[in-house]
Structure formats: C-alpha cells, structure tokens
Amino acid sequence: MDKYELSEILRRERTNQGLTIKQLAEKAGVTTRAIDYWEAKQKVMSIESADKIFKALGISITIGYEPEKEV
Image (spheres, rainbow, N blue to C red):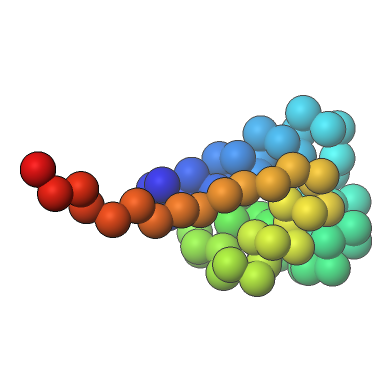
C-alpha cells in the first residue's frame, strides 16, 4: 500500500458518508488541521491516528505483510 493511499481512502469515505472535516475530527478525537494535512497528502498518518479515523468512519483497513515466497 502506498503511503498516501490512506489519505485517498480517508477523503473518499468521509465525503461518501457526508461528514465534514470538523464532524469527523470530533468523532475520531483528532484535530481538523490533522485531517486537512492528511487529505492534502502533506503529512502521513500514524498507525494510531489511522486507527482512530477509520474506526470513526466504521471501516476497517488491513495493512499486511507477506513474506517473499521461495521459488
């Protein structure tokens, strides 16, 4: 997953749910400025912040690791 994909998912899901940045910030317990930065791809979300945001949106994001397969 590209480091900015979470920003794209955040903006898409927030707008699909009809939430303003302020509403989501209050629901997730983060600042509106942080959401502005994340959506504008000016900063990358921490795992802790992503967890808060996506829980508030009611969606789950799985970030996985898959070891290389031997051939």
